[in-house]
Length: 289
Length: 162
Ligand SMILES: Cc1cc2nc3c(=O)[nH]c(=O)nc-3n(C[C@H](O)[C@H](O)[C@H](O)COP(=O)(O)OP(=O)(O)OC[C@H]3O[C@@H](n4cnc5c(N)ncnc54)[C@H](O)[C@@H]3O)c2cc1C
Ligand code: FES
Ligand code: FES
Image (cartoon, rainbow over all chains, first blue to last red; front, side, top):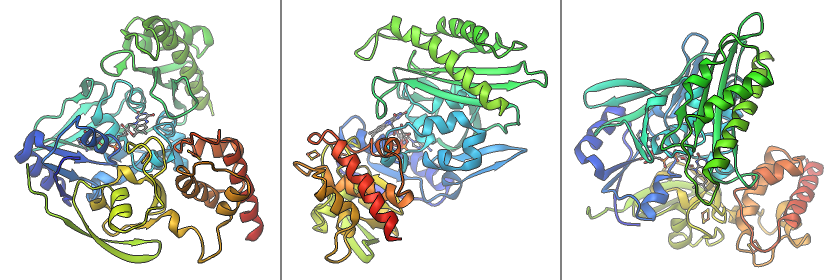
């Protein structure tokens, strides 16, 4: 690895001033499972690596029924699937964080890092989009928020401007009759990159019909996508296999997958249909329980 | 390019207070092996895929090739060297030996650290859990079955000891 300096500031404002000064030559370090590999392999270069794990608001999380989940950007994956309450409330995030790499990776990798790295196949992003999460950003001109569905701008690229960092991710509070799920297709059982990943969230009405649904697709375009039409098509419908399959057909229409060694575009489109149906089924079951 | 200064880091390794100097770009794995002479942890892939470099960092298994030495200030680290209790092997080590759960042995230190961690959590872990939790550890020799059986046997020993 090329030489760099290491800094571990204790406040967000210190980070902002360091990264404003160094621009592209500063790289933030959360769990390091992407950035250390990228620096070692020469895919990225840095004069200074800024460890953000000494900052309380970046490494902690809290949940309230009023404000939902505020998830510090550097909180490691395992916190989400090991937490009895959070894993139940945010099923899709628990599903995602449990399959990002293996146990060793999950001890370090954060959801914030997964989002900022902006891989089209990142496993936590479709779940965040399905859960309607918001990115909370700090920068030299103060703070701003951006919906996670608008956060990624291309493979490895995001909306953060010079001097900005992701501080936390805000995920809306969940009620008794909402549920969510994430599934990806990979050729192995674990430790692989998604050929397609789908996150779904539903909220049911008193009468058991769907009040609202949100579906998001990963690995079928340059960025994870919110499947708006497919989601809206479910409003007022019964959570039936037929309706879920129809939503899957609509979701396929926005997918523009590539063909590569992991699968052809045709195969990926087929998988979108299958996974939309499956994740909606699981999300609805979780909402009923 | 900055002329990187060495960082001074104070940690606990296998229960002993330890301090070292390292360059910011050096991984914990490099520090353990090259600065501290703890060569039990192995480098397989150097990119987080194989788990041969697994150590415990504040009670969680991590790939030490994906941790910077500079990051472990104040942390508690356990390596494969700390698993045996003086000259007594840990049940996990005994069962790997007895069950011939290794051939070339490069993957073994990582498997021992991760297996002990999972059995400390649940000595009765099912085969499915064992296979899932050890999916971050790769072995090119054994075909895994003997490893899984050794972990199950070690779990039984650990459960009867307490
Ligand atoms: C063996 C292995 C297996 C993997 N398997 C999977 C998988 O199955 N699914 C999957 O989705 N991913 C996988 N990954 C990728 C990786 O683990 C994830 O992307 C991880 O979630 C990144 O989080 P991190 O905390 O490690 O980020 P880091 O590596 O610390 O950072 C990631 C990027 O985001 C930037 N960054 C970090 N924090 C911030 C912030 N607060 N504000 C702005 N920028 C920031 C960094 O500078 C860097 O560019 C795998 C990686 C490895 C090594
Ligand atoms: S050497 Fe660290 S995971 Fe392979
Ligand atoms: S024994 Fe050779 S890699 Fe596992």
